[in-house]
Length: 99
Image 1 (cartoon, one colour):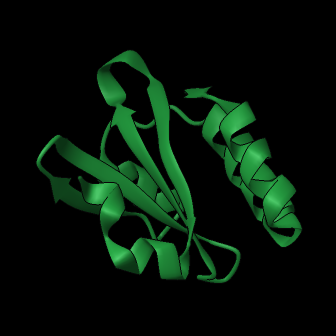
Image 2 (image 1 turned 180 degrees about the vertical axis):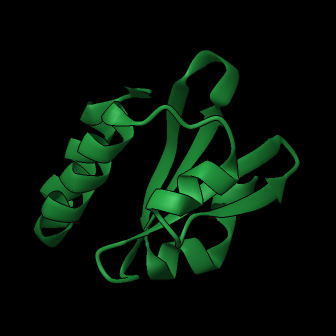
């Protein structure tokens, strides 16, 4: 899959250095993947969850032992992943990312 974009992840881990290793690991895995459904994603990353928002379905990954959340829009038919947000657990719980 193609991930748009690593720069977004890099900007986050520059603020949260302990997130770099797990975000890089997620990125490497995603680049090698050929996911067609959320079920296929969950075979490799069991903590992936679908969240329904006004703008559609987003996929949320727990990163760094549940300390961070990576929120993406998966376009399986085009093999694309668009990073919507990378947040601390506290920021995620505020729910502003759903708007």
